[in-house]
Image (cartoon, rainbow, N blue to C red; front, top):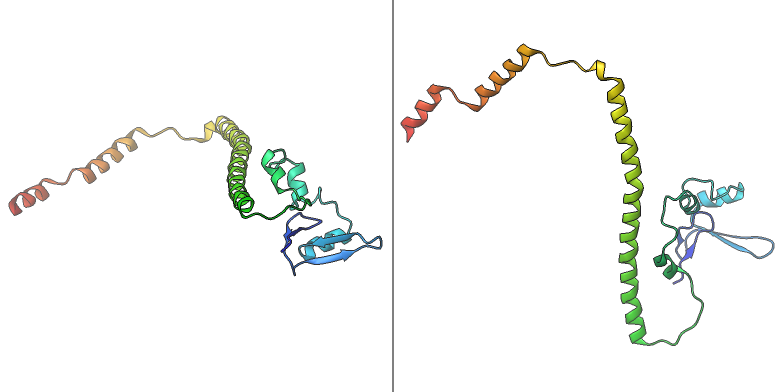
Length: 167
């Protein structure tokens, strides 16, 4: 089973799925869905369309330079089959996938740090500019709240005497 990449958005195209377009010079273009095919026919640039892999890589939204990505490249070198080689390859593929996901998570975390930092700065700036909108606490109100809280914490004396009679 050969999995191919969509020419426009770079997602996987499974056998029996998608659309195939053959140009006059016999160049074959595979598309995963009609959305990609229509965008291709409209001569849209995948690097300028926000939902494509090319856009995400160009605008540093995804990991682009990493040694784990080299393992995904297609190799057309025939090799003699051996069970030991196949088992070793499967183990390596699992390990590479683990490493890749770990690095992608770290990349996303690092990308989000900048946004969090900027949003925190904006919040501090907003509080500084709107500090006059915040009301100072009222003296009488504070003591009343404390009295109400004390009533909830300490039960009345009549409740204590009734509890003592039960035991």
